[in-house]
Amino acid sequence: MSSRARRIAISVAASMMTLSLAACGALGASESSDAASPAKGNDITVGLLLPEKANTRYEQFDYPFFKAKVADLTRDQGEVKYANAEASASKQAQQLQQMIDDKVDVIVLDAVDAKAIGDGVQKAKDAGIPVIAYDRLAEGPIDAYISFDNELVGEVQGRSLLEALGDDADSSAKIVMMNGSPTDPNAKQFKAGALSELNGKVTIAQSFDTKDWKAENAEANMAEAIGEIGKDNIAGVYSANDTMAGGIIEALEDAGVTDLPPITGQDAELAAVQRLVSGEQYMSVYKSYPQEAESAAEMAVARVQGRDIQFDALARDKVDSPTHKGIPAQLVPVVALTQDNIKETVVADGIYKVGDICTAKYAADCAEIKLK
Image (cartoon, rainbow, N blue to C red; front, side):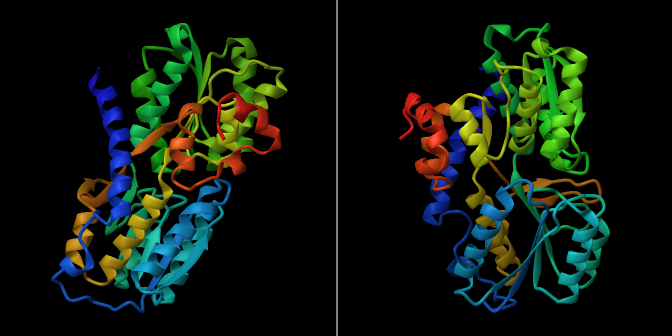
């Protein structure tokens, strides 16, 4: 087994272990173990800035899990002020400034544009408000960062695509790469991880950086690729997330492709899980949003209450941004999601019920793969 394959296997195992530890309260230090006197009590205000609504995860999972965890940690005395930028960097800058003006105690920020928001992060720092980067590493004086191992996400996607191609995975196989938004630093890491698996093994016939991660932009890009390569000459498609995978499938079907090539994804959106069931999409990457959101909430509360031992336990890794080095971080592991492990992942973790997935349209497909 190669070192990269071992790393992926270890990550999958670690994901399951970490989820169990988190459920038992073993992640980080307990409140009672922290000797420092809290800087603030439970009556705190936490600002949460999320980037967009096109990807359903933010409204459906991240915000609710984060809010519930803050309530739990503060005995229902803490408040979460929430704003979603709807993919507008300028709107997010205004939302960040409003939270500074409102004198929130701490801000958790998932940046639309990691570079553009750097000045706003500095303003928060100048106002004495710590900022924790969530999911995407923003520039500026960030206090901590929590996300998934983004390069590993790309590696898992790339390896899964090669596995789907099987004996057809050779240098003659033409692949289309549909990467994420150029303003999202995570997209670069996904791309780098995928290329580390795909380079030299297949031909990257077309590659796109997709504005705002939007399905319609991915669909337009894919239509262009089909025109250049030919609909029957595309062996597989690397899609960085599920939203774009939906647009890619639309373009392929509009071009008359009935036997879809293997297509990757990420985020385990409900529509994507249903596409896995029907065979339209080969895989997605399941990331434990409860673990990420709840850990971010723990970080935020510990930081503002001065619980340094707990904060340090939650941020044992270090990452570098273009402007700052050695940022305390927590990198959450990921799982490759296919038809074979839907029940053991998104269903077992309570993300979806089987009934959510196996609607009338997908009932026969669910029966075929014994998902019940």
